[in-house]
Amino acid sequence: MTSKVETNGHTNSTTNKINGVEQTISKPKGKSPRTPKRIIFLSIVLLFITYITYPSSLQPTGKPTIEHVFYYGWISAISTGLGVLPLVFVPDLDKYWIGVSNAIASGMMVAASYSLMMEGCSFDEPDDISDISPTTRTILGSMLGLGFIFGTKSFLDGHDEFSLGDLEGADARKIILIFFVMFLHSFTEGVGIGVSFGGERGHELGVFISASLAVHNIPEGLAVAIVMLPQNISKLTAACWCIASSIPQPLMAVPAFLFVHYFIPILPVGLGFAGGAMAWVAFCELLVEAYEDTDLLTTGLISTTSLGFMLYLQDLIDER
Image 1 (tube, rainbow, N blue to C red):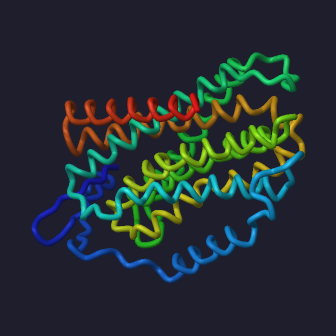
Image 2 (cartoon, helix red, strand yellow):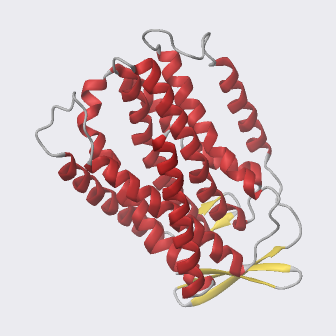
């Protein structure tokens, strides 16, 4: 099954090829997509949670509390929605620029996958009680991640009637697949936040790790947004989807903080799982679609530039 977008002066036409038969859906051009009321309500709820969970003292003094751990994980998740901001003033994208967007997203995801795998292989914690090497656990996790995404895609491909709001077919399956990858990736980030708050210097290290992840989450949100916005989705809706993909961060940070000794041994597996899943989507989905919508030179140049920039940004964050 393939999906492409063709444009003329008045409409955007999305062509889905199902079992050899092309089905074309025309979308009006030049008209901004409307934001559903439920998305506006959800945005208000997110702001309300951000306000009421604010701890009495933002900087922990002494041993961090559960409130601190949850709030820093929550802020890290909310920052993912900021990835939409660079695209606020971007007009409707035609077929070529959708391909460029996919190339940018693929480069970002390859960089994130590489960083996750390296972090898992070099994992070194005094409380790691596992007899299995971090590299072995990371490789095992990556194989599980690849298998999970392959199984998920096979399931979605077998359901042509699958829909997501106003999206149907290939567009809906593509978005839900990328969302799953980022959602699963957020589990390991949440565990990382909780574990960082659990040590002797948790009040300092936890704040630093959370702030680093918050900055790191912005380009990850951008990677999600540039895939979603060409599908006639409003900016606010895309931001809510980006935030939702990071919701496991505060939810996993608290139990990881409370039971740090149990979570540390499985962290390399989680890092490998997320890294393997991201690599599959980047190479087998986004890069392929970028090549189909542009050309080999453009895809290679844009994705490589995106990869290099993301790796540079991650190194910059690690140095600080």
